[in-house]
Image 1: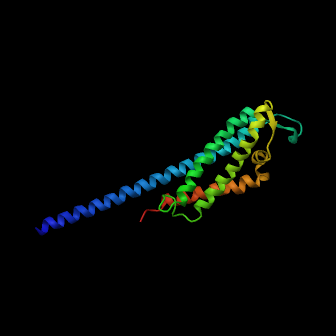
Image 2 (image 1 turned 90 degrees about the vertical axis):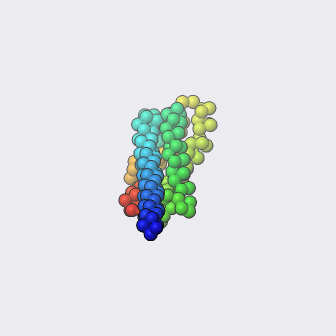
Amino acid sequence: MLGGLVSLLYQAFNRQAELRDQRAKAIRETRQRYLNELITAYHTVKRVRRLLRAQALTHAAAPADRRLRVGRYDELLQSVLDAQLSIEAMVRDARAEGGTLSSVPGLAASLRSAENYLRSLITEYEQSMPAALDGGDTMTVPAGIAAFIGPYREAPLFRDEFVVPAQIAMAAIERLIATPEV
């Protein structure tokens, strides 16, 4: 009888350990997915920035005289919209009690900064596109986009509100993944 009880306790203990391991694995996989999504969003935004400069701007002798090709601008900003929405979902999880990202101090703030910056580009896009679509193939470069696609050293908003916070968030999630669940 005592042997049977010990056997049941041992099995229960093993089941609990297995459940803890499965939960820890699921959390680690979710965090890894978030990290991959954040890296993808980060690279997408950097890619769009480069493509806007290379493909959406018209040529002009003076940089101030360059115009933006409406079709390419529209196409590329849709990728920024996707990145913004992806980061917005991460902000929600980072702020949620018990969320897979909620245990990292400052993570939500870093993600929110990056998301807010992208939202400002999307807001400008939403405001400028109706008139641009009625006005022909090119448009004046909106101020936020001009700052976004400018040289990196002259793009403090892009650098300080998107790049740095996104890099801080990626590093925080990487540390979270590397830290064993207790």
